Structures are given as C-alpha cells and as structure tokens.
Image 1 (cartoon, one colour):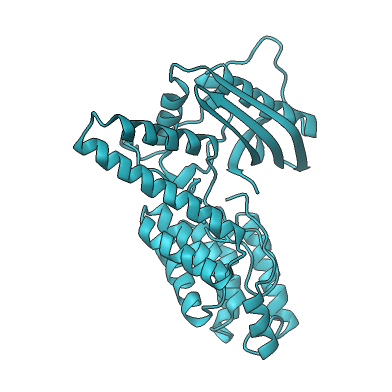
Image 2 (cartoon, rainbow, N blue to C red; image 1 turned 60 degrees about the vertical axis):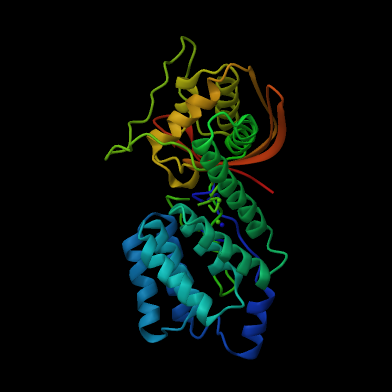
Length: 364
C-alpha cells in the first residue's frame, strides 16, 4: 500500500513526500541521495525500464548500483518494487524486511511488506507491518486506509467462521453481506508505496496481489475471505462484448475514456454481467490478487442479487498518455439498504480500439 492488495493489494501507484525520518537521516549523513551522477542516472534508467515493463534490465541496473553500494536505500527499495512486479514476492519480502531492519524510521518498506503479506492472506503480519508504518509516520494516510481494508478482511474471515459453526446465525449473515457489499463497491488494489527512500517518486510496480488492500495488494480494498472456485492454470480469456449496431471503435481522446467509464457504470446498473466484465482488461489487477475466475464469479454473484442496483458517475477527470489513461471520478452506488458515495480512481488501457480497466481503487 506506500506498499505493495491484494487490497482490494494492493496499485494506481501513489507518489509520496519525503518522510521526516528519511530527511533526518539525510541531514545526518547516514543516507546519500546522489553519491555520483552515474548512480542517479542508473536509478533513473532502472525506473524508466520498470515503467516500460522491462523488468529484467531494470533489475540489472539496480544490481549494478548495489554491487558497489550494498546499503543504498534507494536502490534497494527500487529492487523491491521490481521484484514485486516480477511476482517474486518472497524475494521482495526479503528486500523490504531488510530495509525495515536497517532503516526502521522509513514507513514505505513496512507498507509494501503489508501489501505482499496481504496478497498471501497473511493478514496478521500485514496488520503488524501497517501498524509499524503508522508508528513511524502517524500521518501516513495510505497506511491508515490499508489497515482499514485489512481489518475488513479479517472481520469477513471471522463472520465466515461463525457461519460455518452456525449457518443460521442471521446477524453474522447480515454483517458478512454488508462487508462484502462495501468491499465490492470500494474495491481497489492494496496501495504499494512507490516512493524511493531517496527522495524521488517512482512509478510503483503493479503487484499481482495487488493491498493491503490488499498496501489492501491492495488489499483490499483491498481483503475478505470468500469461497473461491478452483483457479485454472491459465487465466480466463477476456470476455468479448457483443457490439451494438451503432458501436464504433474508441479513439484515443478523453471523451472516449469517459464514455467507457459511463458504459461500465451502465452495465453494472443494468446487471449486464457480460458487458460489465468485458470492461476489464485481461491483466486487470484483481483485489488481493485473487484468480480472475474467482473474482468474476464473486462479482457475478454480488451483481445478480435480487435488489436493483443504481451506479452513477460524475465529475470525471481524465488524463490520456498514448494507450494509457488515468481517470478520477465520483461514484454513487445504491442497492437495497446500502447507499454509498466514493471517489474512484482508475487506470485504463487501450486494447484493440477499446478502453479497458486495468486498475481501480477508491481514491483519497
């Protein structure tokens, strides 16, 4: 979350200001941001390669720095992000854990540890890591949000257990349904801290378990224990929508992105599961990094409940960069007795002329 949700684990990557503790280390001379121009250039190149998805070369760049400066906090943090993006979660955990031992004043490594733990459904460890992040940096809003997502997942597990013991427990059934409704509305990747402990903001790697939310990856939004269908070895093929007679290939402008978002909300409101799921890219970062098939099954189950659903969006703000766009808007959701409003952030990608959702989360 600053870490890597499954929450609901835990990714749009956020950029973070230089923590006070890190500033103190820099002033004391314990950390050096730019020992040489070459090091700075190498880090920038590693960041660029990671953003482009060239993870192997990006890792080589960070290893070049660490070969001569093994304690370099900035390069080690970058390496942890790259390993997370490569799905080498145990190696990333080792990197961030060692950073917390060498620089306990920095909250970002704790946050990213929580995201990775949440992806593995080790929610107690994720909770402890987030509490440490908050202890070192009490105003760390992302860690607080990720911690809330972790609590929600832990509560869901507890209610599930209660129903396994007593399936007729109406109170537990009601509470579990409420939590799942809330999480389905506010699902986001656990937010992974993408800020290098060297003072430069980096684009965070998109962890598959993407929360603590899930840091809730995410997590959940992004984390709740739910029965899941057996995951298949290969990810399911992306659903193909049935084109309408007047449909036209989407162009690259902001209006096309906005239309894609409104179509997504309309499909949700109409309970058109096929069109709703077709709004998501095949590499959509599911809450908590759960299998795509399990996520789709759960979404279909929630949407197909008997109560009508109303989903509205307003104040859509879009920024387009080639085949990638970011959008932020106000979402209003109503179903039965549940009525919520939240600010939603999405990362959209253009595939075969259509804008699809790759990441989504509740924004601050």
